[in-house]
Amino acid sequence: MSFYLSLIVARTISTFLKITRLSSGTSIIGRIVLKISPDFLESCNKFIKTKINVTGTNGKTTTSGLITHLIKNSGATVVNNAMGANMLTGVVNALSVSLNPFIKTDYSVIESDEAYLSKIYNQFEADYLVVTNLFRDQLDRYGELATTKRLIQEGIDKKPDITLFLNADDPLVASFEGKNKIFYGIDNVYYADESLKTKSVTEEAFNCPCGKALKYEKKFFAQQGHYYCDCGYKRPEPKYSADVTLYKDYSILKINDVNYEIPLVGLYNAYNALAAISLCLELGIGNIVESLKSFKVAFGRSEVKFLNGKRTLIQLIKNPIGANEVLKTVSRESNLLIIINDNYADGRDVSWLWDANFELLANNKNEIVVSGIRANDMALRLKYAGISEAQIKIIPQIEKAVEYISKSADNDITILPTYTALLKINKIKSLRSK
Image 1: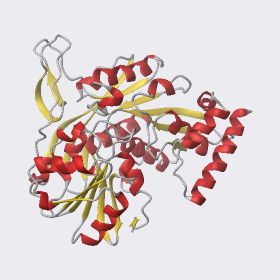
Image 2: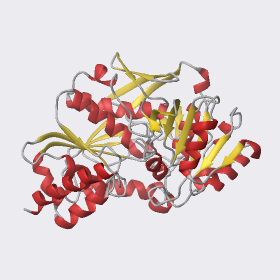
Image 3: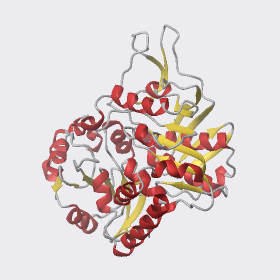
Image 4: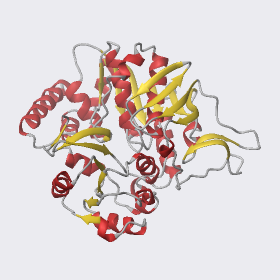
């Protein structure tokens, strides 16, 4: 009875928050639901046929959004946490406001924070788990990569029959243990524009289980590529592999002689798309090529908006590897706003700014505006990246910074926010879809 009561309460609060616009409600509803029905997730199991989770450092929201979109367009029903709130309360929030308690939903696609996967799996059943990558991220929360990997493995161990979809090109991800494993990976990368072919200065080095450093036949970025060791250890053969061609505004993945055009930029997004397409091919989801044409990215994940009529690209940054891949795509002609917060959801430790390759912005032609709680830290980092102080404008208040760049920009705008800054700018009314 408490389960059905919690659904009523969740929908009532959700409607109220939408009308009043007091909050996006990405976690507050989840907290209330768990007070009413502590076993809420366990009760959800019987209302969903196939349960999919997506975890990893980068790309969770984009990958789960793609999977959800492709499933919906196939005609099946699906629930997911589209806003990217991926801790326990966020997952409960998403299910409580969208699950139909009278008809079984075909699929759930739940993005899961690495540290919360095990807690979610205490009650929630699982059929598939997609793992995107493992990079250093929020060291104050996760510690080193070994800790993050252990947290995910603990979740996997609770569901021994789960099917794992693993990135073969990431040696840490490929080494997860489980009895049902399917790998995806990239064979070759081609650049339609040479300006996109920028080498990352931040690299990750990992040892083979035998103790020797891994070698690479091909290295795409960070630790991802075709690795091997003289002892015989090597990258597992992917069931789903792709040749990727990168363009300035989109990418093409060739999988099993079929071209999939994705409206996403950057090699990091090609990996996200490959994970999503591979899983949907495994599930027998149809009409993928056509469905991709209508895909809309989640807010802040390579999303294009308009700020006072000016084209504005918004790209989330939160760790050095992800930031490097985003920085490669930033047009030197654009007007740039970087917003850095250090709230809990962002990670309190902003030392990652010094590991990211902001030197790529040294030849940016326009003023660079920095904002957020750690605006001064970002300004200092840009100074050491070779950008003159005269070119850096510090406006700590986010709303004022957005207003300033909307008036001063004479060209396209690029906004690079951390997570809580992204939530803040999502509420700014002058930022529109058209």
